[in-house]
Structure formats: structure tokens, C-alpha cells
Length: 529
Image 1 (cartoon, rainbow, N blue to C red):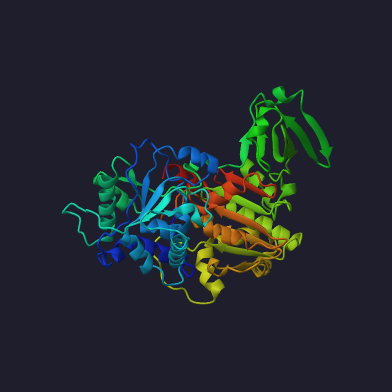
Image 2: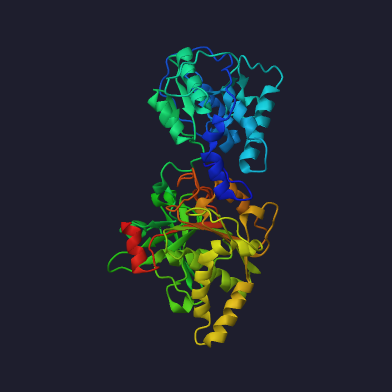
């Protein structure tokens, strides 16, 4: 996960703080390399797992304790990125060079997210050191403060180390001091494997150039590969009806048909997942999983929003996935909808059309609240004048573009005055809010749209989703191919995090929009550029 952005200006300020970390380190005082009496040399090291979230039980951890463990040296940016990283390495030990503590001290001041993480890390270190009977020279037990999954020890640099660095690396730079500590620990604890963990790519490259083991911090990644992201839809095999013919049950409820199916296919289904059957010469089926009980699942056919009679604010679905999305957006039992897709797939248009219908026509919600991550694509243009809503105006160009389309649809034939009145009415029901002021708020009976959610961290997406009060619905949208936040990837994005965590929840749904509908030029550009 990238370093969480600060509250006042999350994107640009975070970028400068992380990228300029090396520059700040250069000014840091050169500290002799005092270090703890680190653990005694271990047996020859076998291949050990990466630094992954602690998911094993205590009994399994004890079973692993007989195997050789690794010693992880943490860079400062890992702790500023995730203060709980201390407890994420299962049975392995952790080592903190003294220069890391110096840098944590330098980052403790301020109200940014980085400063808060630095203070939280310091509090955790103080709690570990304050446990009765704790001895820094022998290592602090990481499970002493209740983190049962952490079975290793934490060591500090309390005694001098024999650090010998190549002449090409200036000794006064903090990065190089940490590399020197890793090299000295490798000699001291051979053949035990010593691994540097850093979010800084250049730091890892330098470590490997010196023959040292280096890894990225893995715990912030929800998925290793973005292609593994849950799509929300599943195509049924061509022999589905043949295999299900003996065990299937069906019944009618109004205009909708329900099917109860069984068999091995149920194991791969999730609640609110869409399934579809398309075969030449046969009737197509488009349905949603509404219930999974044991070895059976219930499928409910969908409302056909591709037909003009089921249009939403004059908008009809142009493809299969848009029809799935509108069924989620118009369902009052769904509290959270996540929409992913490339540029031009209609995410914002569908969310606004469904929101306006349920705010102005059905009066299910009182107003639409829109926000987005203010991470710029290029150079920052500086401070923006005006109120909160006026400052957010330049970031909401997508809202203006889509409102222009929706206003023309609703006021078609009403003339210029009619269109102007319609636009004023639409804008009166839409409030634009900045993410920076969301803490502590509760939105009741609101239709909340979070745009560009791919640029949010998991911590930010949690903050926004937990703002929902009674009767509110949240729509998170984003394009994982357009991430502009530094150190954020498809696997660690807040949008990916939300999709994965809400998968299968009865009141949440996700769909990946696959086909662009903006224009033939935009579609072709998405493929070839």
C-alpha cells in the first residue's frame, strides 16, 4: 500500500513527502551503528515465505517454529506506510537500525497521515519496550502486546556493527547506512537469511546490486495480480441446462423468474454475482444469485434495462454489463455498489442516472453527494479559490459532462428555457464534497458517489464507506488502469480492497464494465494506445 495521503492535500503532498525521503535522509545526523545483541546464528535457512499477513493460527505457527526463520530489516518508509508492519511477519524476527528510529523521530511532527503513522509506530515500540521483563539486548517479543500471530522478536541496533561500504556509496546518507547494517548482519548471522524490506524501489535495486536480499512490503497488496480481481459476472457453460435438467426448480414471482440449482457449480458462486447463459439458437438467461444455502443456489432473473420501457432517467443499458450495473444501482436492498471499468464504459453516467431517478422521482434518497480523490494527472496548478464546492469544481468535470447529457435527455423538446431549468434542478440536488473533511460525518438517506476510487488507499476507502448512515447508498467507481497515486498499484488500491472484502455480502454488489460506449475513437484508443 502506498503511504496514506495527508488530510489537507492527499495526493501531491504525499508524493513529495515520500519521493523526497532520500533528500531528508541526507540531512539526518550520521549515527554510529549501535545495534542490539541480535539473535544467535540460526541453522541453515530453507526457503521461507514472504512477509505476508499473519493468517496462520497459533498452533500452526508453533509447528513452523522448528523451521529456520529469517531476519527482516525494516526501512523507515515501511513503518510510515503501515505502523502495524511490526506484527505482519509471522514467526520471523525484525531488526530496526538506529537511523530508522532517527527518521521516525524526524517525521513525528505535523497533522499529515505520515506524521500520524510515525507517532503510532513510536507508541507501539514504546508499548513493546515497556512490557514487564522486556530486555532489548535479548529482543522484544512481538506477541507481548496481544498480537498473537507475531511469533518472532524485535531487535534494535544497540551495539556497534562492523560496517564496510563500497567507496561509491557515501556513508553520510541514511539509505546507505541501512544497507551497511544489512550487510553487517548477513556476515554476523550467516547462514541465516537477512532481508531488507523497503517500499523504495531504488533502495531495493541498490541492495541487490550489493548482493543483499531485498523485498517489497507485501502485506498491503489485496491481490498479487490485478487480473484475479472479482469481476462480478460468470458465464454459464453450454451444457448447463442439460446437467441441471433433473435437479432444477423454478417458480414465478410477478414478472421475475427464480431458479434453484445445485451441483458443483454452486461452490464457485457468490451472493449478488451475475450469471448469464448465451448460446446460438437457445434462449439467453441473465440472472443474479440471491441466495446460497448448502449445495444449492437461487438465481433471480433481471429487469431488462436495455429496453426503452425500463430506461433509467432516459438512459438504457447498451451492453450486458451495463444492464447488470443498473440492476444493482436500482435495487434498494443493495447498500454498496462497486463499479470498475476502463474509460468510457459509462460508470459515472449510470450512477448519476440511477441516483437522479431515486432522488427526484422515487424520493428514496434526499440528495446526491459526490466526492473524489484529488490526485492530479500532471503538475499541480496550485491553490484554487472559493468555497469547498468551488474548489472541487475543476475536479468534477466528469459530473458536468454527464449532467449535460442527462439534462438534455430529461428536457428534450422543452426548449432552451426548459433545459436551463432542468439543469438548475439537477444541480440543486447534487452536493460536491471534499474527502479531506469527511472524518466524523454521517450521511443519512444520501446517494453517495465516490469517483476515481482507484486512487484511494484501503484506509481512505474505509473512512469514506463508514460515513454511510441509515438509508444511504454508496457507489464506488474507478478505472484500475489509471492509478495516479504514488506507490499505489492495482493490487493495493482501495477500490480493489473494497471489491475483495465485500464480495459475497448480501447487501453489496460489484460489476466490471467491459465494453466502452463513449465513441469509436475512444474505444480504439483504449485498445491500441
